[in-house]
Image (cartoon, rainbow, N blue to C red; front, side, top):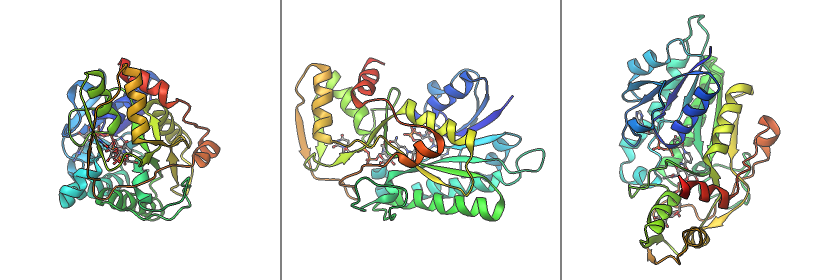
Length: 307
Ligand code: NAD
Ligand code: UD1
């Protein structure tokens, strides 16, 4: 039986991944400090190592003997990275290096444990190319994006110097059931679904014409599983996106329509370090791993609202 460690497995994307692994008959360990994740998200059957992903001794213990690691633990909010630069760096980059380091010789046969890790569209920053292919220049605008780019650079070191197979997935804006709407740092779809379905108003930062490539969580899980199954060589990175862009204003209107009400919008100044237009090119992922993000925004929103 195959056994995996999922860091951040009590979070939004991680908990969906753990469920999928258990459903295909794998054993699952989770390392999570429950800072934004929840115990209620831990699927029955997964074993929790509660603690910090930058704690080298704990990570070594959690990784010992597993067949692969999905590294998802991070402070996922761009805004929180702006406010707590040094603190989020510890989790977002030191945490990743801690995982790569521990993966070097974590198997009983002395071989390295492969690591599939979450990068982000935030690495492209203010690169104006549309759509963004993986060959586009990386120009992060935020501490969060800079740390995700740092993860990619250290993943290359892990592979080339230490023999740790790595695959980086640059998720665009992921949404779906179980994304926590209750913090000011939450993803925009979770906040809009929560508030509009309750008949409350929403806030839009900036003019609402900024665009995002929203990808449904089940499609992201498919990409994670395929990356681990195939483990292409040379520590590659792949966009995980749909190739379709949506403005925040259109998003609000679509969710409003699904909830049967016109949204009441309060406009606020744009957030610092914000990307204006974010649209990914999904071609490399489709060609190399055979995964396309098939769920439409409307279907994904309906599933999110119905959950
Ligand atoms: P999430 O906040 O729901 O999940 C992150 C998990 O990591 C949580 O369970 C949290 O408790 C855990 N965690 C945070 N700091 C930790 C620490 N120091 N030690 C141990 N555990 C810690 O966020 P998510 O949306 O599920 O994001 C998962 C991954 O995907 C992150 O790496 C994030 O940067 C990346 N990502 C997310 C999106 C998105 O749109 N949601 C897009 C691009 C990349
Ligand atoms: C998101 C992810 C980040 C990921 C990145 C990849 C979250 C919390 N952040 O960042 O992990 O790496 O995508 O592209 O999932 N907005 C409003 N009103 C709100 C909330 C947000 O107008 O109430 C706007 C924001 O200003 C932004 C857009 O909606 O322009 C998206 O914001 P958000 O969901 O926080 O995501 P990103 O910052 O794009």
